[in-house]
Length: 314
Image 1 (cartoon, rainbow, N blue to C red):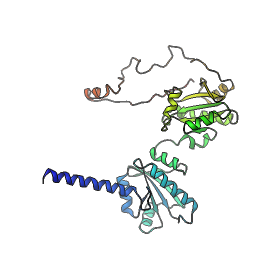
Image 2: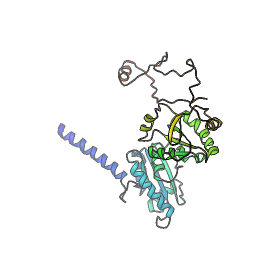
Image 3: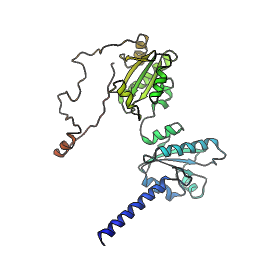
Image 4: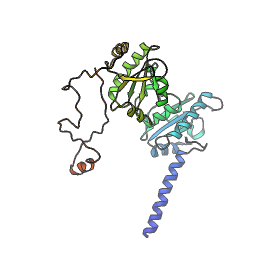
């Protein structure tokens, strides 16, 4: 066999694999939801795709308005998540698939959404039934529930972008905004305290939250010189005033907002946090220029990849 023929065979095989993948992604109804017709389809889907959300249902979409809404939502979320997650549907009333549902012991009433990761069942879908929630779930199915979906945070105004921020700040009331990242451990600790303060201050002061890891929000981080999370900024009269300097607790937030003033850090120079670049430590700080060379020179390396995350004053 010549090299030319071998190259042609490899190219044809690659094209077949790509075509097979596309067939699994694009559904027969012209959307991005995979329709599973039998157990073979089901096994193939979980074998090929590592992040799968499956809608099981057993009612006619024409007769059930709620189900119709869910199906539409899965279609929209599947389109947004294309390449990052896969959405499929199984009608448990249909022939061969009915046997599959019975084998899996799944009885949808009239529907249930189940997530599969790396070929195994992971969890039942536990987020809101809307496109954005479903899309965010597919991006990080193992992550915590988004703050704006937390039932204890109903009095926190959740800001998606700069337009929402401007509208909230210009609403007439004093505003305290917590800028955060979902993965930040200090943010997770502060959220329930912040939410509890929002309950008490409802109608007097607006407490808002903004995830700066959302696409496009990096501009906000630059605007307010935010280089760590959480960072709380105070606004009054439609204008940014200064950074929050109170305690990271419900009572601390409420007390500070009674008389919000700009305050210098209470830490002495000796107590101030030292950055890794300045600290004397056995940890080697790597950057774009030194990473490859250091890894090549050392046989075994444990690397911590991090982003700035800070704890506000306690």
